[in-house]
Image 1 (tube, helix red, strand yellow):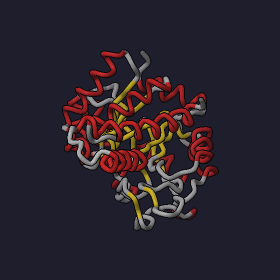
Image 2 (image 1 turned 90 degrees about the vertical axis):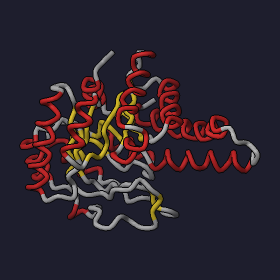
Image 3 (image 1 turned 120 degrees about the horizontal axis):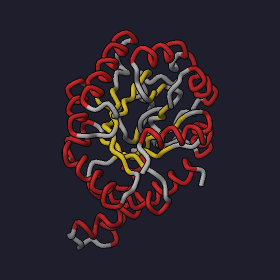
Image 4 (image 1 turned 135 degrees about the horizontal axis):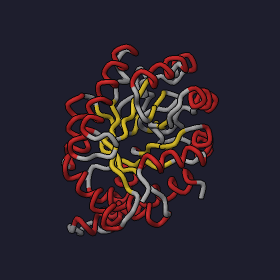
Length: 288
């Protein structure tokens, strides 16, 4: 089986993207894994600090590793949006395949310093671990939104500066880079999310030497995903769409079967809805 690093580099060369989907409980993992197997695509499971604390920081590792080893399948675990060096160390020690240190709210100087420390801490524990850095604030909640997150960098003049991106990547030593290119976390209610600046993605991808990662993929148009992958985004994150599918499935079964109380029977509807979303996204990202 290929390593995650090799799979990412292959996606970059082929101008496709690997799907990254977040979970906070087992039904989400079941849906994502079954969808990935159906499509035949590698997949990354993401757990933010809040999600992994709910699921269990160690449990997440055990669950994903068991699926990978039992089925010999390329499914990997990412410590998504990690804000402290202590949490970086924790994830590295427990065996996460990759870690995102999120210093997007910090100044450029502070972000470089903290991200560089995160890289050093993680690699001292596991030289093979993949570390991602983020430059440019895009909001922090994978939720249904009534407005664009305050402070999100979505206007042309606020997008991640190319020169800053080059400096950030060079000085931190990260393996993956997440810039602000018009994307936001969460999905706007009753309106499309802001459009990606594809030309800016191309410019950053041409200036830095490592693969790019697109956060906040939920709510974007299909053609934007394809263009982003072709322009250098080797990984695409989806979370809010999955959460919405989970809820819609649960609402449907509660309406259709108001007297059902068996959790696994209720959650089967959520799993069905989540699988639809993940399969469609994986096919699109992979060019199938």
